[in-house]
Length: 404
Image (cartoon, rainbow, N blue to C red; front, side):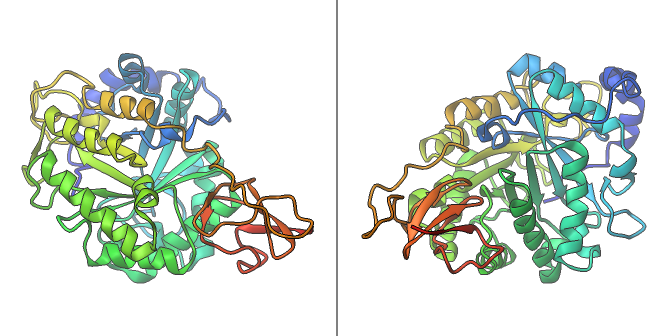
């Protein structure tokens, strides 16, 4: 899924001061990214990708004011190009000393919005490849979460890491640890899409997640750069992926849809597929009617008609108005109930003195939900389904509150 990130470096160098100068102008005036109240998770589920330092980044506040969009998916966190286990932007800018992206985040938050940060992407060296184990990988990502006070993070697992089972184990293990260490953190996992939903490595990724008991807020596929032809082919791939979520994770249909996501590419893809406004409408209709958990696209940097250049990294190469694709993600956030809402509490109580509702295997629970099981009261630390209280261990999802 080659999504050109640095192909427009020369164009960006010549134009970024004109289009994003307002961001840079206040870089020294803004403090390090301040904490902000989290948005409802429907906004993180509808956050389109934005490269804040490359590919002629637009002023995010301009986009917000034009569309109503409240959240962006900032891309990408990578390992340093020279090697190591410390987070950088695009492999070149250390997160530890960053002010440019931090300033952009402050502007977004100052305008009532927030960000998620995406780690990985196509190409480059990923932290899962260079960090020696799960804990080291998680520690590197925790630096990013702490630096920017993040409430959401995206694991964009693509080539070449995608085919490296040890690296994927590091990434998913780190994601699970971050989920435990940062209660309420919204986590999306994004992977390549095929006509069959996803490929062999994608199904291995799902199996790995299940084997370690990790459930993100959603698994999303990118149905482009793989022989796709418009929105109907993308809908077909999403429906196939829905089947894979059921068969590999053991979910029922509704659960699979609610944890499924679409990550599209607006306009001309890297291999000259074309996705027009009408194609996004087709997928949007499918996503909202089936209650998918995420709808996003690559990228806001491209969400404008080409004028002085046809560089596919900085414009869409299709007929459109500026930010017209972003309006779909704004609409999706409005059409999708906030995903942080607690699920319906089961009404069946266990026998004995426990007044808390009995744990139900098929029920979805989120952090703070309490249940009874085997004569004890248990409280969920984060999102879970099918994990039996008393079997997940001290560091698992269920906290034992004692006998009831």
